[in-house]
Length: 372
Image (cartoon, rainbow, N blue to C red; front, side):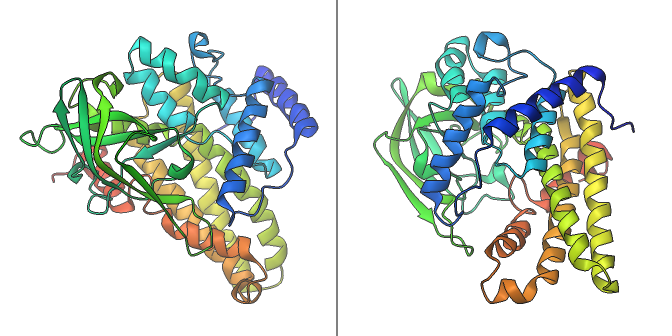
C-alpha cells in the first residue's frame, strides 16, 4: 500500500500543519482533573471549528465542507503526531448517527450546535447487565402520550456530568425479539428523573459516569429513526466510532514508539517488546488505511470494522504493556502517572466500543460465515 499523500492531500496537510503550529493549544491539563480537562477540550474544539477544520465530511447544509474522509484522517494524524488532544469527541459517531437516521428537523436542530462546540453530548449505550451483550439492555421507554418515560441505568457513560444531551438506547417493545425492540432516544440531561454519578477511575480521573433514569420524559420527536431501529443505529454508530479518528491514535502511538525505542536500546528483552509493539501498530495502521479507502469510495464500514477494533486492542495493549515494563520503577512509585494511565486504560481497550469477544463473534458469523 502506498502511504504517500496525493498532491491535494499534501497541500492540505501542509496548510493544517502550519495552522496547528500557530494555534497549538499547549499541553493538556492534568487528566485527573476532569472538569478542567473538559473545559480545555471544548475550548480547543471551538478553536478548531473557527479554523474550519471540523466536520469536513459533513454536508455543507449542516456546517460541513462535503470533503472526503481522507482529509479528516490527515487532521487526526497531524494532531496525533503533534501530541495534541483530539477535540472531536462524539462528533464523528453521534453526529454521523443524526446524519444517517435523523429527520431534517433533527439535523437542523442538533448538528450545527454540536459542530460549533455549543452543546456537549454523551452516549448512553452500556448498562451494568448489558455491556458485552448490548442487545440485552433493560432500560425501558414506555409510551405516554407524546413522550417516552425512560427508566433504567447506563454505565461507563463518558462525560455525562458535562453533557447537554444523551443518545440513549432503550427498549420500547418488550414483546419483540431483543434486537428488534430497541429504539434510540435523545434525552435532555436537565430533564426530570436523571441522576448522574461520576466514577473515579484507578488513575484518578472521572471520565466515566453512571446515569440513572427514573420515568424521565423524552418527547417522541427526540427519537432517532423509527421505533425499533435502535440496534441498526447502534451498529452504525459503533462502526463510525472507528475510522479516521483512529489514525490519529496510530500517529500518537508512533511518537510513543519512538520514545520506547530510545528507552529500550541495548536491552534485548525490551527491544523485542518494542518490535512487537511496532508490528502491531503498523498492522493496525495498514488495516485502517484500507478501511478509510473504502469509506472514501462511499462504502459503509459494515462488520469489517470489527477487525479494526481487534487490531486496535492488540496494538494498544502491546504498547501500553511495553511502556509500563520499561518505566515500571518510576510508574510504581508515582513519578510517571501518564504511563500508569496509558497502561490501565489500554486494558479497557478490549471492553469499550464493543468487547473483544463480541467482535470475534461478529467476524466469525458475519465475515467468515461460520455457524452460530
